[in-house]
Length: 394
Image 1: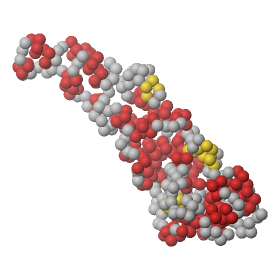
Image 2 (image 1 turned 90 degrees about the vertical axis):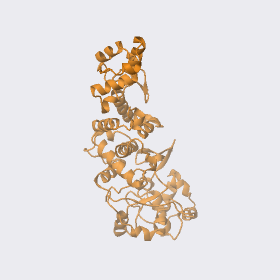
Image 3 (image 1 turned 180 degrees about the vertical axis):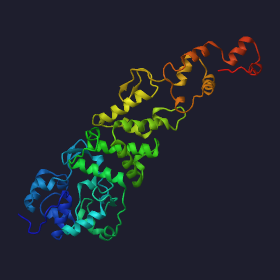
Image 4 (image 1 turned 45 degrees about the vertical axis):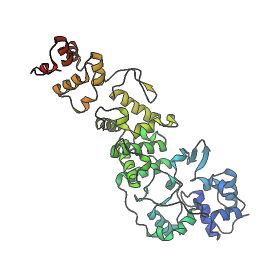
C-alpha cells in the first residue's frame, strides 16, 4: 500500500519529525494514532528498527536509508548511533523540544513547514550553529501528545513559537555550536587542534563544558544545576581554551591550582567537581587523552609521595614536598616552620609546596637546635624569661 498524501523529507530532518508531519498531512492529530492506523509501531519507529523503517519507506515511498539518516538508533549498553557516531544516551536531551526561532521562520518561508533536526536534541547544544541564536525549548507535553511528535508540538505552541525573539549568544558560544555541528556531520576544519578532534565528540563537548565551569565558577561549581546561561557561558569559555590546545589547558589547570580556596592547597580542594567528574567516568578508555593529560599535570605539580596513586597512575618521582612533611623529616615543630616561613618571606603558592633541596641547609641547622620550650626545660629556665630574648628563633 502507498499513501496518497505524503511529503518530501527535508535536509537533516529526523525520522520522528518527518512521520509527525506526514500524520498531520493525512489529517491525524496525534502521530501515534496515524502510525497505528497504518499497521506500524510508533515505538519501533522511534528506535529506528530496521523492519519498521522499511515498512514506513514502502508506505510513504521514500528510501529507507534516507529516512533514518539523521535519527538516533539505539545500540545497547546506553549508546546511540548518529551519522556514524556512537553517543551515550546522556548526550541527548529528549525531555525538552529545542528549536531555533530563526530556523523555524526560514523553514516556513522556503518549504512551507519547519522540521526537527537531530542536532537540536544534543544536550550540550543550546545555540543555533547557523544563526548564533539561543535555542528555545518546549517542556514535555501532557498525554496524549507524544514528546517526540514534533509537528504536533510545534502546532500546539504556534503562538509562542512565532512570538519568540531569538537573542544572540556571542562569538565563542556560536563557535562551540558550529564545532559540534561540524563534528556530528563530519565537516572538519583545520583551525581546531587535532587532539580535540581525536576525542569522541561527546567527550570533547563535556571537556569544554567542565573546563569552562572550572574557569568561570571555580572548583565548587555543580554543572548539573547551572542555569542555561551559565552552561552556555561555560561551554563557550571552555571551547575557547581547549581549541588552543593542551598547553593552554595545562595553564588553566595551573591557574586553578594557584587560586586554590584552600590555604594549604590540595588536589580535591583545587579542582573539586572537576576531579570528581574524572573519577566517576564509566568508560575511562574513551577519555584516555584527557585523563593522561590531567594526570601528567598533577604528577608534575603536586607534592605526591612515591607510590601514591592519582586516577590510576602511581607517582614514581618525587617533585615537591609539603612544609608539614619537611617538618616531620627534620623534627621541626609546625610553629617553628611557620616562623621560618615568615622570616624568609614565603608567601602564596610557595606555602603549598617546596621543591626538593630548596631549604636543606637551613632545615639541617634548625634541626640541630631546640625549640624554646624544650630549650627552657633543658636549661631549667622559666619559659617566660626565655622568650624575652631579642634573638630570633626559627
